[in-house]
Length: 87
Image (cartoon, rainbow, N blue to C red; front, side, top):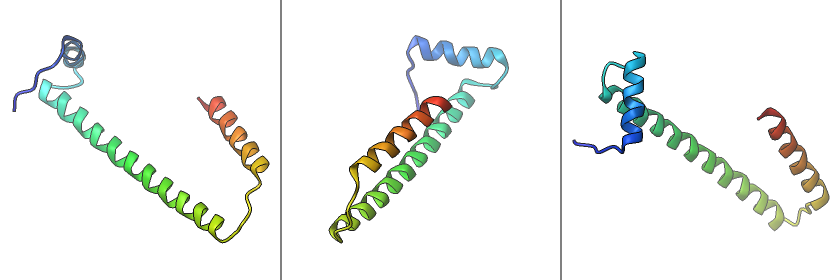
């Protein structure tokens, strides 16, 4: 397989090689692909969890269980503030 890289990516790989982090450009690319695969799996798990949660919430609405929008809004604000503080 032959892969073409733009100059920025070539420079990035060369930097990793110069640092001694990797022995070859192939090692850098393999690691990058492994990380991409890991990211894809994590993202798929997130989407699966979201779909599950959405299904549960829609089912509760179908059962006639009320949702207090004020409470939901306050909870979302708290989560948003927590994320900002931890970032």
